[in-house]
Length: 613
Image (tube, rainbow, N blue to C red; front, side, top):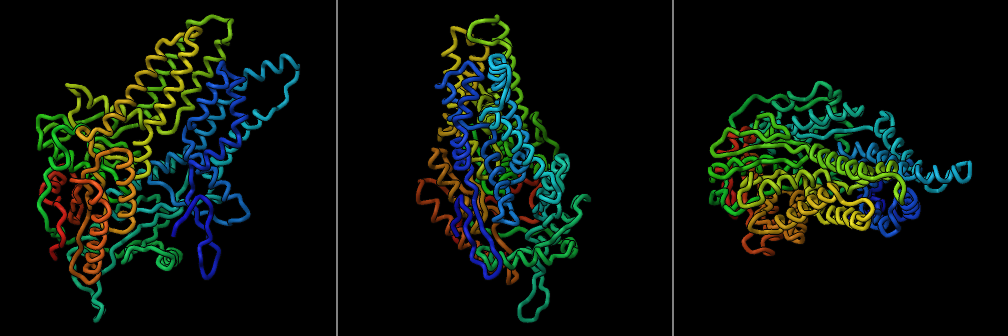
């Protein structure tokens, strides 16, 4: 059913349930509008900026404000007498962890505004002899108070509980262990670990006897191995079995709710190890040069969390290195919850390392915060150099205005850290003799990947605003290294926008599954990419095909219907776009050798029918 930014009553026979999809942009506009006059006064009275400059800065987004606005909305619902309990479906791992850090970011914004306000306070105290709090001071106190309140709410074990949901798969378990460690470092405790979509034992409907099914047996063997990796710190584990068909609508979700309430703190029954299993699909094999041409410099993989985009991106990079041994290929992750190292079976960091495959392949997991820290350090150095040249007097208070200019970098729009890291990639692939001939990028899940692709326009506006202010005051303070830094950032953003929409240079492969929810999200993603002018030549339908038991045969039929629905939705719009299919492989490919073999022998062009296994 459709939802909006206002809570909607959900029709239930018993109980009271409302549902809402928080519109962070709308919440932000409302938040700014209610406080705009005070924010303008703080910036105008506390800096050498005039009203036009202040309007230009405040028209842009504050750091992390989407996540902050969402958190403030959650806090508002939690404190409302209208609701007794708020249940939150968060973003995937990496961005959830970043949202949980937003109280400290909000506190940092309060510190910047407080620094701006200090100059006004000193002047008022000197003129009046006393100091009383004004509307602007109360706003700063509100920001700091909200930050403390949100931090306390998130870390209060009685007020907030975290249920972590995972799959019984090796890579999902590796990500879960990392997430639990990260939450523990933030003094947050996970109340229960929910292992979702476990494979039930196949049963013959008439006799009630168990039957053999290559897919189900191999799947349960994989799950047994993964369940053995559950962290010792997970005190309560709840097991949920996979539902057929995919649960949508209130009755299906109510049945899962009953299972959650009644679930024992145990996982699935043990299963003996069985032979590997791979679905058999029709269709011609896919060569990597059908996804990435020799002219391609940027090959992005994206999609809904859990569809296998990391595995597919890794396999494609290995295949590209083998196809073009003279080209320098870089496999890189911009997803905060990095899994490239898990897929390759080797440790990775922010420094690129060689992957031992045919050709020249390097791999790197980007530390966006490190890239942003480097930008901030260059900015701080440029500010200090600029103000070191200034003497006292004039319209500038060198000490105070130096502090304020330092603070402006902390008011940069959200995602500048990820964009700074992405600009590094674009610079590496640019020019006649680039450091990297092809960058294969494992992006964050759908929503945040789109935010990264849409971000250049916002960051460009922010950079332009600062440049305009600097040029305006050039006779007083000059430009120096700060102007050069902002100009370089602006040009880097411009190159990223140009490369992103150049069909010869950039391709985006959408990874999905043949199920209703992934299909719906993938169609929306393709439509948005088309609007942005990003070339999307293919959709890769991963893990297609089931076994021989009755449950698997029924699931295969549903997969074919979803596959056809996807094809109808995305193919007629763009000439040359293809749907590719990848068979279910159990256990999933792991390590560079298996991933390379998997791409060469398994990826296929879409055919109408599946061969029965």
